[in-house]
Image: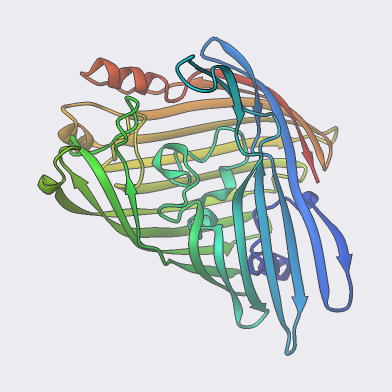
Length: 403
C-alpha cells in the first residue's frame, strides 16, 4: 500500500481521483490515458440563479518505459468552458458596424502542462506548469466547489496560484522522492515577470500595499518544499512552505518618474492532517492551517500583510453512496492589516454543508450550501461594498461526470 502511494506521488497524479482516468492505449513501451471531469451546476447566490461551470477539465497522460528502470511521463490539461459565456455589446451608428454584437469566451484554457523523468529509487523530476508542492500540504480539503481560498492555494483573490507557485505553478521545476512512509518534494519556480496592476477601469482593478496604489509588480523566483508522512494506513500528516520576493512600484499613474520601489517577501508555511479516504466508505476528516505574509489579497485588491488561514472538511460515506459533509474555512488578517489600511479589518469565513450521492465511482450528484460568516469592515463605502461581496450565501446543485 505504501509503495502504491509513493508511485502515485512520483507520477505527480496523487491529486487526481483514480476513477477519473481511462487508459486508451498501451504497448510494451508507451501508455496514454485520458482523464478529467465534466461538472455543471445551478447556483443561487446574491439574489440570482445561474448555470455555472464546476471546474470542468480534460487531460491527457503519457508514460514511456525507458532503460534502467526509468520512465518518462507527461501531462497536458485544459479547463473547458462547457456552459458558455457570451457577452453582448452595442456599437453606435458613428462606426462602420453598428448595432448589437456578441462574443464568447475561450472554450479551452491551459491548466497544466509538464514533462518529467522518474525512477523508483532516485525519485522524479518534472518541468512545466504543474501543481505546486504547497498543494501537497493542503490538497486534503480542496474537494468542494468553495475550497482553496483560505489555504493559500489560489492566491491573489481566487486566481490559480500561478504567480507565486502555490497553486498551478507556472515555469516550475520539481523533484520528488520517498523513503518508506516519508515522501518529500522541492520546487523552484524560475520566472521573472512584471505585471501592470492598475488599469483604472474598475473600482477593484488596482492592487494596494500600505494604502499606496501599486502600478507595477515585479515577481522573482519562488521556492517551495513539502513533506508527507503516512503515519498509519488511515492517517497522513503534511507540512511545508513556499517563499518568494517581489517589488511593488507605488505612485501616481501619470507620473512614472515618481514611482517608489518597495521590496516584499511573499511567504506561506503550514501543516495538514488527513484521516480516511475521500473516495472510500466511512469517515473522512481533513484540516490544514497556514501562516502567510504578503501572499494573498482582499476583495478590494489590497495585499494582506499577515494572516492565518484554516480549512477543514468532514464527511461520512455510507454503503448506499450518500455522503453528507460539512466544511469550515477562515482566513483572518492580523492587526498589521489595520495599521496599513486605516483601521480596516478583514476576515473571510464561511461554513459549507452538503450531501453527495456517489451514484457510481464516476458519477456524483450533489447539493452544497454555503453560509457566509465573514466579518470585514472598512471606513470607505466602496471598499466595504467589495468586502461584502467576498463570500456570499449560496446554494449549488450539480452533477460531476468523471471520465
